[in-house]
Picture 1 (spheres, rainbow, N blue to C red):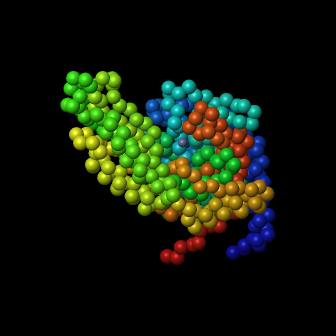
Picture 2: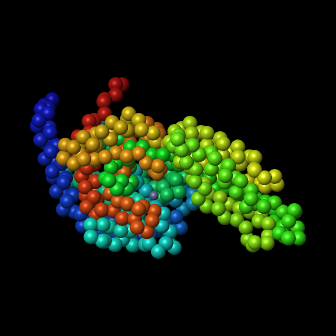
Length: 403
Ligand SMILES: [Zn+2]
């Protein structure tokens, strides 16, 4: 069988990459307009119809590229998308692409459309992460343009519930990850352009403290004050933090009571937990349950839902090797690319925790996600797609398995 010498191989790769780069650079306006359509279609938690419209837009691009698409309906009006395109030859690298199309902006938000301000695109979800979906699909279109789509087995999972920690899509992502050589998550790139190589795990707890109401003056002793019970619980929960081990606890919401002169019978709190190691995740789960089972004041009843929804993604050799490959690629094309650890969780936590070489933050470079100042640098839609094309073009196929 004839084989190319390494120099000829490199020349062929370089030629293809240059063709991909001109393809991408000539289409920046197309990508911006595609992003505008996605961003202007609200896909918040309260808008299942909007989420479905976004899904349909994403699906159309995959269908044009010859992927087979499957819509997966789950409880709570959640519909996710799975798109697959097998490789032409066995043994081709198996790539998993992750990205969500829900955003944190409900229909009631004042932030609903994309605007352009000089080199910036400003809008709900431009970075987190409709922009990332546009980058992923632009990259696939460039691969198709240079005839390289068939050289990989592509599996793409796009979910509608990432912003609430993917309760109905976690299993889909974990199933999709099995046997994949690489997982690429296109969450918003860091402000510096750096990729993400590890993420904290995330937990959420929704706690209700039930007491007993009574007249604050005439019958105070007959009441059980739920706000006092919740306050003691807040302090006890906060004491579970271990910042030196990377464990933080934030009680972000407290709501209770109706009137000044009534002993409140209900108080609700919402707690956010970040952990960086599996042992801390287990400790927090255990100690939170213990607190809930032994309410700090007699006569209260505590109910708690939630838990550690995302396992920590710790740095590991498999992921670091993939990051190194992206950085080496960047160097080859004469730009520098950083890598950062972050406290924010994403769906990449699931794949990395399963040991799949994972890289995240491949979306456009931007800032202020989850706020009305969310924006991305327009040109990075093209830059990031380019980076992934280049990195995948020099990816070594996995070692053949012996049967
Ligand atoms: Zn987000």
